[in-house]
Length: 409
Image (cartoon, rainbow, N blue to C red; front, side, top):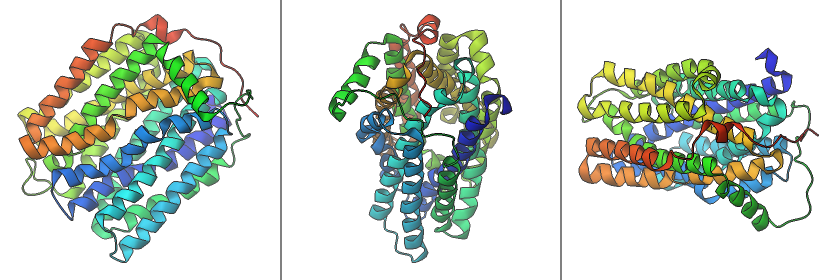
């Protein structure tokens, strides 16, 4: 961590605090809904609400990230999430938290996540040398997964049992701390000044750049397919794990424990992601990781045993970090910094915009056909996407790009 510099270290610390809050909410919110209903569509509604902003707001956020100081945008995102969760926590403490209010709050929470994550990915190249992007992103992704799953997920299971309000009040405090940490970054990190332009033209420029880069376009398309399938799969996975009527029949705390196993694998992946990509090349790392994810996700189709499912979670964590690091680092290498916010946003629109649809489909298909047929369909879709889109994803395309411009100010 020290070799990457103090500014990166501050960003990493703030991101770690934010991701702990994310982990509590992402696992805690479905468990809160599960106390009210086991309807797959209503349970999946949590993921619909959280991921819908990625479809509706990502392009506008990317344009802002290339116009405004990136530190300020991240602070605003942290404060926005803190405010909405404080309100939800107060409502929960008064036993006045109906599902529509929770869904609305989670939509605002998701909007803050879009703003924070898009901007932070655009900020990393300003803080570290180009050759260190793989290591820097690996550590950020590792911290994200550890906090989301290894710490936040088990803690969410405990907090749900203690008091529903704490699932929301605890993260609100963490986001306030994140905002305070970000104020210590040395500079506004303002993108290079450009001629006046409308948001529409800014957004169009980012979309065209993604369209004209076949490798990035293919990775974005593949990510969109994988995220659609994954969200359909995991938006209802809690029904496979938790409750007497579920295949595994485990208590709520066990759902957090499985997420912790995912994080253990992610820790291992984050420690070696840069070296694996350097040794195998970005193409083989990305394709191999995606195939591994697909194979692992078939395990619940044949067994509900605790040991195989825990092993699946462990290996999913490892493979997913490798895929994510290649995806993020490749964009940062080959996209000019002045365009990075908008291209990140265009990429994330394609990659993440499919998630609310995936969550909606997951709830509907699980309710109609059952969980295991849904799991098979999700894996089939992932593999089909890889077969159709892998051709333009080459090592040369993902390593070469224009020199990055300095945006420190």
